[in-house]
Length: 112
Length: 115
Image (cartoon, rainbow over all chains, first blue to last red):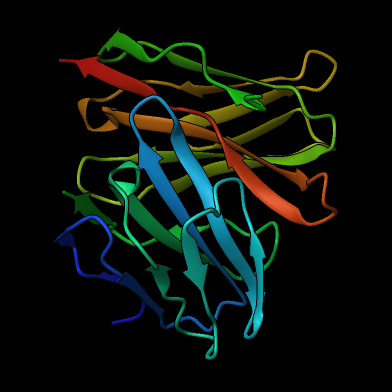
C-alpha cells in the first residue's frame, strides 16, 4: 500500500542506549521530516530533508542524527538516549515545500 | 519564542453549531498556513490551507480565514459533527532565520463536539 510507515510503533529503551526509528514512504516525495510531540509543546521539528543526501536541522536537533541515502527512507537515530527524549515521534513527507505534509502514525518512545 | 500560538487548549461545541478555532503568529515571513487534524494514536492529517495572497479558503464544512494585518487565522467548522472531535493544529510555513524553510506548528486545540 502507498503511504508512509513508521517502525516500531512502540519502543522502550534504557538511558544511554542507541535507538533508531525508521520511516519509509512510497510516494517518492522529495521532502521528509521528523517531529516530536510532547504535552505543552505541540509538534516540534527535529530534522528535515529536502532530497536524498540533503538534511538540515529543525528546532530541536540536539541528541539526534538523521541520514537520507535513499529518497524513500529517513531514519532517525538517538545516539545516546536520555529521559528527556521520551516522546511520540512523527515522520512526515511532502511533495514540495508548500505541499501538505503526510504523517505516519508515530512511534511512542519511552526512555527509562 | 513561540511563533505560532493557539491560545485555547480546548473547545467544546454542540453538534450542529459552528466551531471556531483561532491561531496567531508572530513571524512576518510566514506565507502559507495549514490546519491539521489529529485523532488519538494516529498521525496528523491535512485539513485545509491558505496562502498569504488570499484571505479566505473554503472546503466543504471547513473555512479558513486569514487576517494578515492582525497576524491571525481562524478555522470555522459548520456544522460541527461528533466526528470532528480531535486535536487541531495550526501550522505556518516560511523562510526561517537560517534561510531555509520550516513548517512551525502551534500546540493544538482539542475540539469536543457534543451530540
